[in-house]
Length: 368
Ligand code: SF4
Image (cartoon, rainbow, N blue to C red; front, side):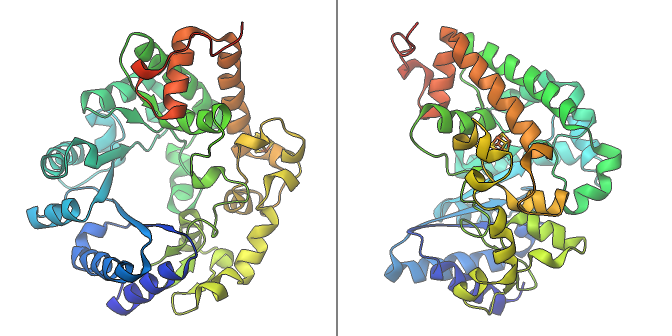
């Protein structure tokens, strides 16, 4: 990305009417152009002196390439770091081969360095769950516990971009993921019942929608969609997309999602043919399948997923893996809420309310 493109992207960011703005850096590896990261952060902070928005920064990184100065900059400007840890070392190294075959070790050493500067909470991690990873849900959860993470976010691999090419080798059917998910969630609930606070973040997001009047803010589970309306992605070459998944699809030749370039105004981007097309699938309550579904208040429309996989942003959701996944997880969560086992409810309420377990008093909450 050139400095000019970066500066134009900052202009577009501040054309958004939102009072809360997050600028997230993703690669490739953004730490390899930390000079540009610094420039964008400083530009945005200067601009915000007059804009007065709630402004925050995040970065997805292997953590391998940060100098001490870079980490100090992240600390001083409150850039939240997120990295990938796919499980125990054997699995992680196989997923992320490097010349020295030590990707896991490098990541864990870099994690320690980053935590020493940013604090323990300053770095989070996400697993990419491959076919091989499905065989050991406890091993994955235990890896995150061993590394001192209080949460894990369990998501199937994405059907977009390069992941599509490798899907034959590492992919799986949704029912295989859901079996893995159920086993992992059972184990995590068992840990919580035994007094160890540990969160499965996807369940926590859904429970926030189910058990509270508040939305989690999670982009893929919004209606109207977060696609384009809650996020814009500025590619290194200046093209603008309504979601990271749309950028990934474009990388493999699907250009239907390109909104325009960073030189276009925010209003022009929002009125682009790509957005008009995607908005046909933006509101769950109008979509075939969803409009008759009991779970629609808690779910989302995700038009990019359905445009990519089914060819139509407004496709009937009942035929999609997105729906298969959510129908299954909602049923599992509602079954547990109906059973109202006190320790499970304590865990669910703690996750939904974002409170420590010991501040949750279940007694009287459920009328039985
Ligand atoms: S579970 Fe399926 S049908 Fe129900 S709202 Fe979600 S996507 Fe739509």
